[in-house]
Length: 111
Image (cartoon, rainbow, N blue to C red; front, side, top):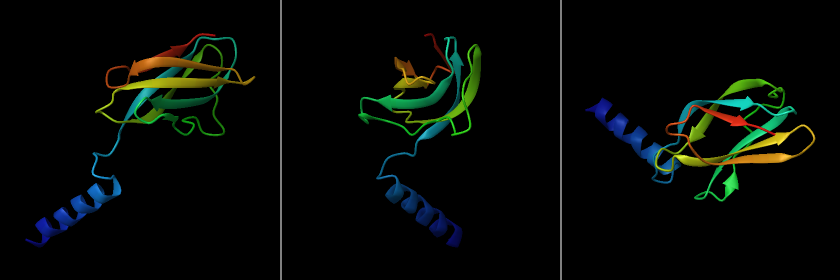
């Protein structure tokens, strides 16, 4: 009985912390740089949020030309379709729109 009450308490706290929604899932996404300049920032966005996520590359990470990097990305399974944004070394920004993160495991930026 105590275990069941504790589990219910934990579940209630999780619901309260997430605003009643299921917590976001995480998955691995490979970001490939097929362009001619290093990528310094990768962000996710979707129409429901109307904003970009924090940078998914850490401050000490870049995606060099002709290489890729596996990133752990948070996503909401009820949304699935996201825009993926890359910022290059010189500041140019490119976006891939409507990427299905529920099914895709890689994206490629060409610039």
